[in-house]
Length: 226
Image (tube, rainbow, N blue to C red; front, side):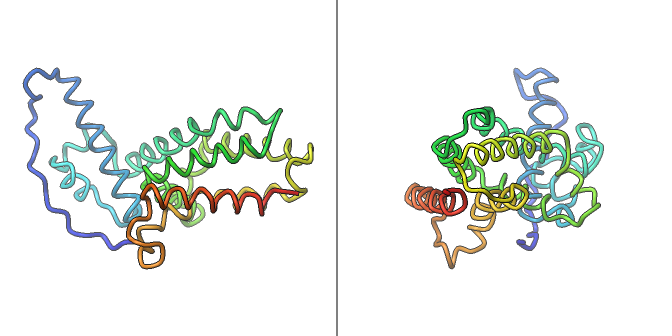
């Protein structure tokens, strides 16, 4: 995980809304900027590596202003995690909904969309890895077991069980298969920038993305094809 760097403070916001903006609009804008900063910093430095002061400096607000929008760092982390999970669920929902008529083609198509998503949003992948590898019982680890995350695993299990029962995928342990599939999805976008010496400086270029898609299909075939 990257070592936190010293962030140069941005110019402080005034407390008055910009010309033409209503107070509510200004409040929403400030909250969104705080949210995006927290997501980016947590994904890169981890929960313990980020302070409220770092987020305030990154956004250009006084630290006390953060408490107008969030109760503290854990709520900021929770908000970021829920945003990331919601985006992933929205992307995969059409695929997961087809558990009554599963096919490998729909699986491959869904994973191609996932590759595109995490190529454009690698911070999302890093944040998911952060919560999934957090110490068991910690506040951050508990964020990975909320209702929406549980629903995702239930639906994915249903799809895999249905596909296995129909002989579309080989007979395999669903409990073992899910971590393997999650690893295929998340590992590369989460570490590609850290391993630039291995994967090259353009880990998310259009060419790298196409190579990644071909590799993902080969991995999925090795994992699932009977």
